[in-house]
Image (cartoon, rainbow, N blue to C red; front, side):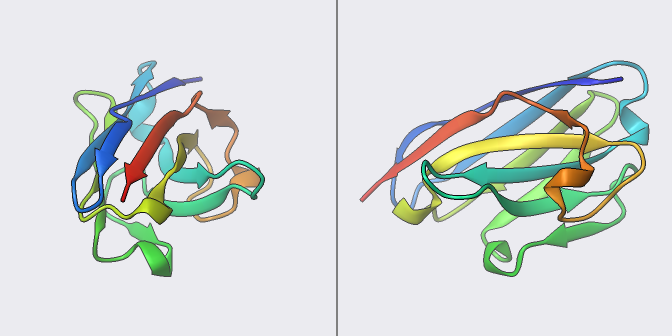
Length: 123
C-alpha cells in the first residue's frame, strides 16, 4: 500500500497562488485514485477534488472549479493541486487521500491518508 506525504502549504496573501504536492511511496501508485480534502478547525473535512488512477477523470467540488486544478505525474508518484487566486476562506489543512478501488468525493471510502499541509491565506 502507498504512503502519502503532502507539501507546499504555507502563508500567502489573498490573490496569490500555491501548488500543493502529494508524494507517494510504493510501486502501485498509478493504480490509486487520489483526492484532496480540506479541513478548518471546528468544521467537517470537505472534499476538494479527485483524480482517477490514470488521470483521465477529474471530479471537482462545485465551489472549487475554476481556481483549483488537479494533476498527476505517475512517473514521479506525485499528484499536484494548483490553487490560484486564493482567498482567506481557502485557509485550511489540506489532505490528500488514496484508494485503489474508489474514485469520488466520499472521504470514508479512501483508505490511505497523508498528514496534511497547512494553507493560510491572509487578507
